[in-house]
Image 1 (cartoon, helix red, strand yellow):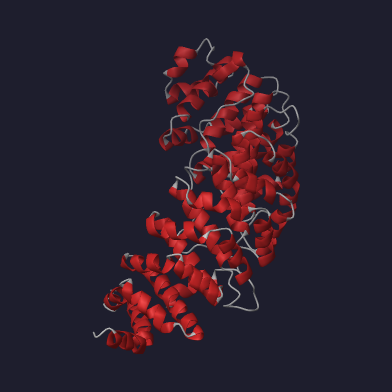
Image 2: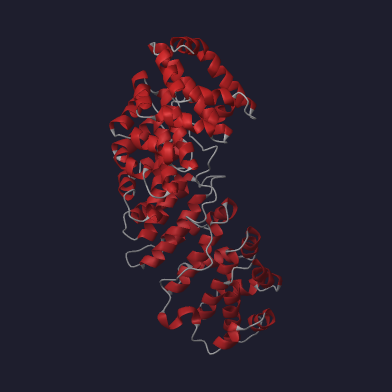
Length: 499
């Protein structure tokens, strides 16, 4: 049973450690937030600037348009290094078009050609806004590359220059700077902290006003979300407090893109120990998050669910705030959602609530959550089934005997017995431990024979006997231990039936 110990120690289970009623549960089998680039990318090369004037859109009215489209790296270097403003603009335009192609080789060519220092110098040329803008765009595309590419931009002094551009009277230049800063922040905690040290956060927040276009607000929300993303180390608490009023405001807008970014930001802020979760709880946003779980677009609903899932991995009190806000009324719908990724996250959230005291387990029962949980065990995709298995396991640890009887009657035992055939040894171990917990509870209530009879009827002991030959040693030992515990009852059962 050793392979479940690490996972159990990460659940918030008071029965394992009375000194800590709940501990932060971090998924061991499934890292729900890892590699979620399709949901919420860290860097962007192609976005739409909402504030770009129509007459300057992409600068495609340039008299050099045809020349720009076919410019070589040599042409770009010559133009950027010239003393003519028009040629410099043409070179920057050609560079950012070349960099818009998602190939790191293009970025490398620009860097090796020594053009970054020129681009950074152009950022301060307030009398030449077109040149400022094109240089900012080119540098932004460089920051969309690898960490090394971002490092080159930062090392050439672009951060203070971009922060200065945030106060530009021309919105499209200011918004371009927001985009660049968002890419730098998305690279990780090192450059996030560089931005913070240069006072980027107050400058970003100063861009938010009642007159700011929605598209601009979306880019601001994305950039603030990127600042919240990294965990090693976490965003300093003082910076979080600076950002919270704006993030809360974003969360109450109707634009789905802004809502999505705000929810992602709160998901990052709530991903940690209970004191970090408490900061989010105290904002009073939980009722709003529960509302957003009904949002028609999963780009909003998914990060809202992630945030709620993080919160219910906190203390009993923090979990109860979520329950009181109506989460359990919404949860059955999420467990039956058409997208398996949503089902998985919903089951993960349920498993954390199930790791709480029997009072909260009873609330799961009262809201009819055992039925969709069993449906997921029977027919969900494997990742969702895995989370559902953990939910059942937690119920058998913290639930009362009556609650476990109800769990069995709902069909959970039959479902997990069927899953004993899966290839994942960790899941098999959890199921064996779950059955063991049920047997121990049956011993206390004098119902061991009845439970063993049911396990036998479901084909459970046949599966467990086969697991004694499993390639995983821990599974073999757990299976043998469970069979030994039930031997006397099984012999009595077999004798009773003349076997």
